[in-house]
Image 1 (cartoon, rainbow, N blue to C red):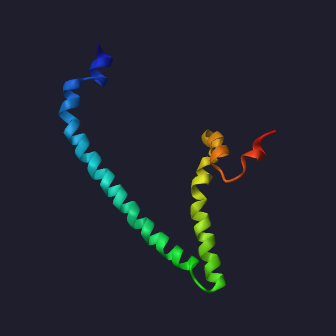
Image 2 (cartoon, rainbow, N blue to C red):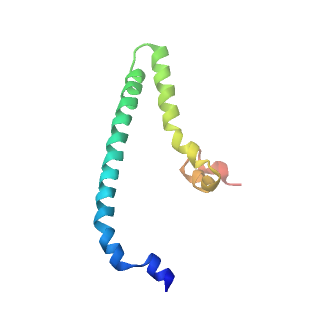
Length: 98
């Protein structure tokens, strides 16, 4: 009975549920607001660089945007996610067919 009392104690779960919800809402909102602010602070200068009429500055902006865009596919190449990277990459699927 120790396992069930430890992990499935409904009276304790109901007692702490309001605290879990309150902390979860505060954490979710604070993380999403911080991520939005950081995204705007990083993305706005990069997009303005990419819109420049000077070729060198425009190239730097495009390189920076390509690097940031490539972060997610780089994480897809982790050993546990290699199968998903085969069908989410921009490489044509025919290249993987023998």
